[in-house]
Image 1 (cartoon, each protein chain N blue to C red):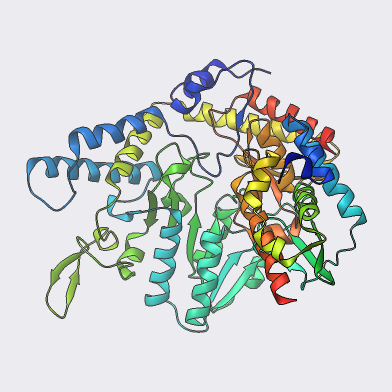
Image 2 (image 1 turned 90 degrees about the vertical axis):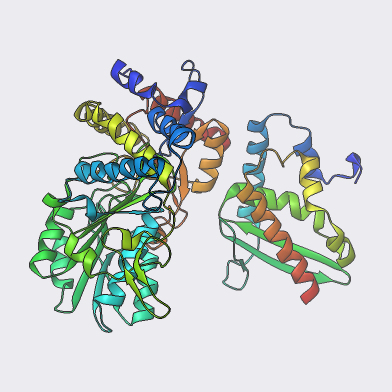
Length: 135
Length: 407
């Protein structure tokens, strides 16, 4: 992925160079997403194994997938926004070959995030990949 | 308010803080309920043990081994004295509080309890105690009764009276709860239990660093804690049991040194406390605890504890001033204060505070049954030790006030 290829919010995130602003953006993205998201908070959509609660849903139109997800943690919801804008409207082949670690590294998130957060996001990504194989 | 000089002097005995600049403060270690930092004498004793006294205990009879074994046993005596146990054989070394909880519970299930017997445990227990009894209750068909809490998250004594039945055999509870910092009325509960012939097991992990413990006065049957919660090293637990109770318990693990005679088909087990100490124990951990007890014996503990109390009161008072903050409990807090912040998931607040150099715990603190019932998003827990500076609390509070900027 070239720098110019980054989705809107990811690009916004890359342009920031201090942690305060980065977290402010994550909190804002997460807060907005939690207010507007249509994700159902049901037992069925709950992703187990995360530190905070995460709900994830998928829709398919043709070859392409649309995911929506939120968390009771705003920072996690913000991270999900960054993740999903890279994966939404893509097909199965793209999603399966997507390099999550590389993406977060390019965003400069790898150094900032705790291991449990990174693990949680990997877990969500694995869940996304599983949903594409099921559907 | 400023930290008094005697606290600064005390703090100088902890090498972790030597790398921190005192002013201006840009970090604060407020996760002492998870683990305390090790004191210099304990650290020195670990190096000293491996450098000059390293030998296995209670096995070989050469001079080096004898010296180390004697030292090892003298620390057992010192620990017994520290807790005012009747004799040193009532002190069993384990790898931590969790192993002690498992040793006692498994032993009682095998030797003392029968299907249908009742165990009372508090909603607020640490998973080390709670999950252990929950799972053993399933395995041995015991009834698990959950002791109710009052509004201040203290065990409801009146309710407990009615919960005790003629089938109640064991009451298992923490002296101080790790998730809330609340000191429980263990004295009253032990008295009530003893009058009803009920065995009491007290988890002292969060009490040991903040108050004098006198097991004979408490008159509990078992009391356990981890050494790393009181300025010593990790990997060592202290499990006190009344002699008659320990004698009645079967061994927990099998192996070397816990046996007297072994034939092809039978083994005769060693006497107390060795029958519970299979395999090579954590010798350097015991040496570190010994050095810690010597170090603490030379401190004015009353003064240190009075300071801790003042610091906790100050923290509570400051948190109460902030309208977005709700404390889970405000009375009988010992070493820790637990709270939630309006509009903040506990993990988000802890992550932002961590970026500012604040070390606190967030989430359910290994006490899910309690925390999920009163604070589903988890709580934030600030926990102090006698080396915590007032300025660290002030720095933490100033960071807390900056959280609004992230909303």
